[in-house]
Length: 197
Image 1 (cartoon, rainbow, N blue to C red):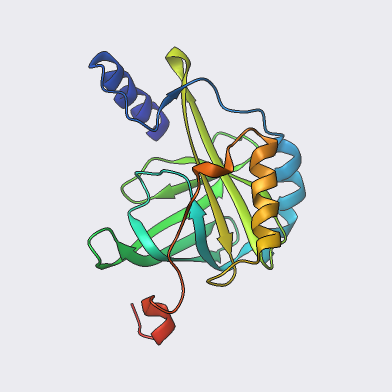
Image 2 (image 1 turned 180 degrees about the horizontal axis):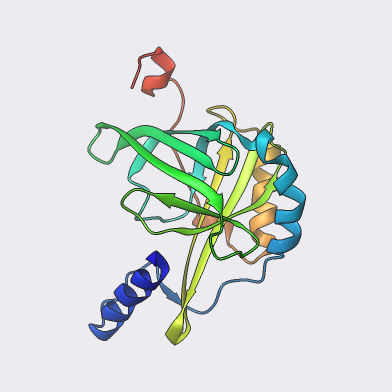
C-alpha cells in the first residue's frame, strides 16, 4: 500500500518535472539479501537494544538530526523502535516506528516510521555488539531509484576499525562513503546528562 502510494507520489513529481533530489537515475545495486537475511534472522534477538546513529547519507525522512538514539525492542515478530534526539530547530524529538519482516515476503527487514514510507532495511554487516551498517534502496519505474544508508554503534562513538568495516560493506555494493555525514553525539547530547525524554 505505502509502496504504491510512494510510486504515485513520485509519478506526480515526474509529471511536474519536480523529482526530489534523493531520487536519481539508475537502479539499486545488487545485494545478496537472501543470504544476509538467512544468516541474521536467528540472531535478531541479539540485535535488540540501544543503537546510536553515527553517520548517514542524505535522508529527508530522518527528522532527528543530532544525538540520535534508537531503542530496539523485539516483541517476538518485529522490533518496536523508539528514536530520540534533537531536530533541526534544536528541539528534543521522539519518533516511533518498527522494523519488521518484509510484508511481501522479500528476504529482508522493512522499516516503518510514523510520517514516512515503509522501506527496505538491509543489514549489510554487524557484529551485534559494536556496529551495524544499514542500507535501504527502492527502485521505481522510469529508471529511477532512491537509497539511504546508516552507520550505527552501541555507544555514542565508534572505533575507526568498525567504521571502516561499514565503509567497506558500502563500497562493496557501490555506495560511495563520501556521501556520509557524521551525526553529532557525545557530551553535548541530553542523554549524557541522564535527563529523561
